[in-house]
Length: 139
Image (cartoon, rainbow, N blue to C red; front, side, top):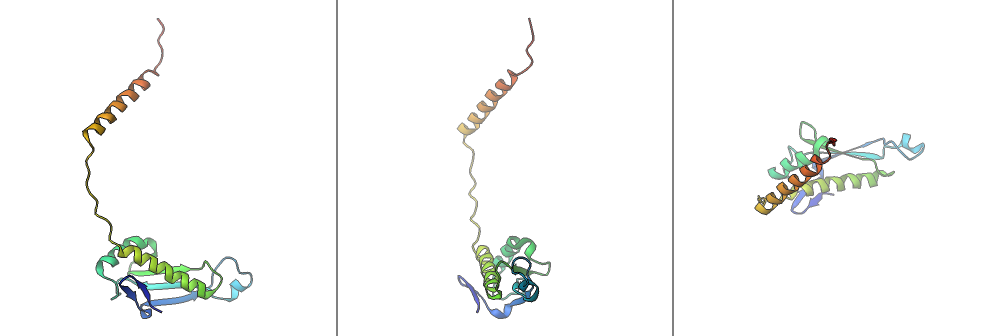
């Protein structure tokens, strides 16, 4: 089952799923069953992702990305292997979707002259208030 995000589709052969033992609730079952999923996706070598998306994904992924360009997602929220598998795939899709939307261009704005004047007046007023808190000298 391939992951589709908009016009980007990641085929199953690009994903490597490893099942590991999870910590947390589950009683004795937790020691016997490998219900956690470790999903690996090699971003750097993926033919499915365009270069700008790969670059944004590198910054968004943070510590989840290795030096070699491999994205690792561990899912151990649920007690069943299938739910964790779906969770890992959904989290990967959400990351790629975030990376696929280009950031909005920042429109430079200027501080108006009136705002600058108000700021300076407020600073002057505050300075006067603080100056009035000084030590009182007796006559």
